[in-house]
Structure formats: C-alpha cells, structure tokens
Image (cartoon, rainbow, N blue to C red):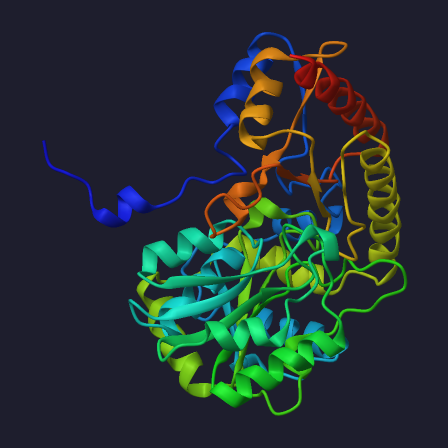
Length: 397
C-alpha cells in the first residue's frame, strides 16, 4: 500500500471541527447542540447582497481575471479608503477566502524552513498553512492573566533567528478577541523595521471592536509600506462565510507580483462571490451599527455568565466575536468530547473548541476553550446553563 506524504501525516486536524462526528452523533440521539465552537454567525446575510447575485444576468459563467474583477478591486479600494487605508486596485488580489490570502502571503514571502513568529494562542489554521508550506511557526506565548495582551518586545527579539522572515498577527484576534492597541502595533512596527521582517496582518474582524475602541490597521503604520501584507475576508463582516471571498493587500509590488503567480496557478476567485462582495461594499454604515450592538450584548452576556461559574476565568475581549476561558478541568478536549457523548441538560448540550489546537507550544491551553458568541442571546443563556451544570457533574465524577 503506498504511503502518504510526511506533510499529510503532520498536517494538524482542526480543533474547531475535529469533534464534529461527536456532535453529529448527539444530534442523531435527539440532543440539541449549541454550536459555540465555530465562528459561523446566525446574523442573516444582508438581502441586498444576495439579491445582487440573484439578479445577475450572464449567459456564460466565465473565469474572472486571476486578480479578481477590476470593478470589485476598485470597490475594495473605496472600502479601504473609508477605513483610512489608502491603496489602489493594483495593490489588491481577490482571493478564495481569507485562507487563500494567508497561504499566498506565506508561500510568496517564505521558503521551506523559514520561520514566522506568531503570538499564541492563534487562529488554528495558521498551523495548517505553515505545515503545508514547510514553514516553521515560532510561538510567542501570551497569557489569559493579561487578557492575551502583546508579549514583551524582548520575547520577540529573543525568538528572531537568521531564518525569521515575518511576524503574523490577527487583529482583533481569533481566538482570544484581543484588540491590539496603537502602542502595541508600533512595537511590532519597530521590530519589523529593525530586523527587516514582513508583518502579516489578518484583519477579518475589523468592524467588531467594543467599548468605544477603534481598530487601527497595520497598513497605516508609518514607514511600513513595503513590509505590511493585509489579509482580509468578507466572511464575518457581512455574515457571508460560504461566499469564500477574501483579499490580499500590499503596496509592495514585488510581493504582489509573486502572489499573482500563485493566483494564476489557481486560475481565478469565485465569480458569484465577487458580485456579492462588490454589492456589500455599498452597504449603508448603519448596517454595522445594528450588528455591532448585537454582538456587544452577546459578548457581555457570555463573559458575565462564564465568570460567574466556579473556577472559570474569561477575560473581556475587545473585539471579534470570540472569548477564551479557562475551565476547572484537566483536559478541555476530553471534557468537550464528554459534553457531546455523555451529557445533556433539558435535551441539549454545548459544543466548544478545545484551546490546545490554537497553540504551537505543546501542553499549552490544556484547560482552556474558545467560545464563539455567534448565537442569539437566548441560545447563549441556554448554552451557559448547560455548561454550568456540566462542569459540576463532570467534576463530581
């Protein structure tokens, strides 16, 4: 029997999706599962952008240009300008989801064996993208005690080697919800300029910032025009995760040229999703006001309920729609599996993402989980009822 590749062997499973078979089995038993494991919002996709696709009259569904439709890239440039990011359509490549934008950045800027520094915990699929491209992630630990603030600059400098080519951040952060301040971004700028590094900035959750705080894009950092690569997606912004449309943005023409070769190799991004994305750029600003208020209320409810449980600690996230919590359990993966296999309360249980998969350091996050507050407030309350009772039952055994 032929053997699979070393890359296939070492490709990590998704901590967000690996427990899905247990959730499916629970549903077949008649148990309702509250999905707090994945960032799939229940906010309805705006009708106007769905109608833009429905009302498209094309006789042939053709390839789009490899960089994406010119009209969509022009609209994206308008969107970024409204957010204080001055780029041209030539600085933008439309990608198949934000995932492809991340992969283009890693593949276009790093060679196999090169290193990328990422504060951990981090979006779990960064591990997968690094493995598939032969790149090594160097994690810089942040802690729940500080709310996952940026680690000290000395930690970054100690991690830099001759193979270091980039630093990657997600701001606001997935999985922690932490929102990096302007001061923290300036620290990263100084490190990148001092050591001639790229800064990959995943800004998928730009619109979701709370408590009066504002998002600052890495693209606006002074002196960083050749260092920053912005990675983006419409998935969360317009509750359009299935559209699979994102963007790769940089003013560095050499990097754009390299990324275009990968874009050409995969031919083109999805046409219908670009039509949807183009219509989304014209969404009125008050759309985000209502969505923002709803997520803010969900965050407050989730964090309050979690911190009221004995032995649970959950920092208040400043953005995105995720929260990390430490639980009074030895192994959150075993606990999350138990929730789906052996527990129910009023015919329901809750699904969360074990946090160890969001770390590169072995044994980190063993008692932590990520929760996505993407369900309505009634559902969050019922899910927290399940979790509170489950923790007492689990620990009593």
